[in-house]
Length: 204
Picture (tube, rainbow, N blue to C red):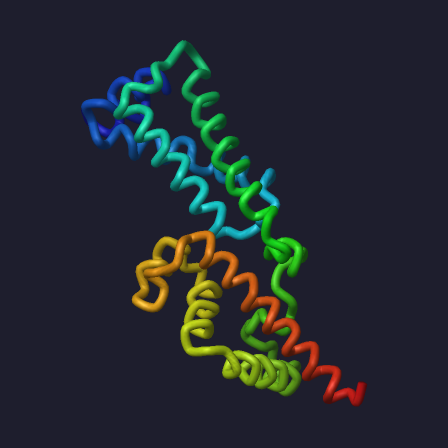
């Protein structure tokens, strides 16, 4: 079926086409990815883009499994939407329960996002000396990390999805959850390193 025709289908008809047309999955993902992402981000205690991306990927994997196994049949208008959001809710609750066991989730270590010392943004012309000084401090802290930890942090800052990072030779033995926790530990370690250096330089 042509893409234009698939795009014009109601959700329930799209699910029917899904079983015989691979492109129907692409349409379903495109139709709901953004809405599910916002839903998950708002309700997650772990405010991390890579984490939310992983959640949504898992949602569609579970949807695939149910559809291919015949475990879902649309029951009328709105049933597909309700089904997908229910999968998203359940997946998110499972992940939130798992992360509640960890004492230092990223959202608590850096509730307002990365500190200025970790931003590594291009300095404004009138602030180049101070920015260069801060960057030097950050680089000194980064150099104290092991090579794998330093690589992991740099990949994370480049917004690489955790599933891609997991394919790197150094991290193939890590689960996604362990990678997230390790990033959290590295960020806290860098924050503490920068804090110590600031205190030492100020004579505190």
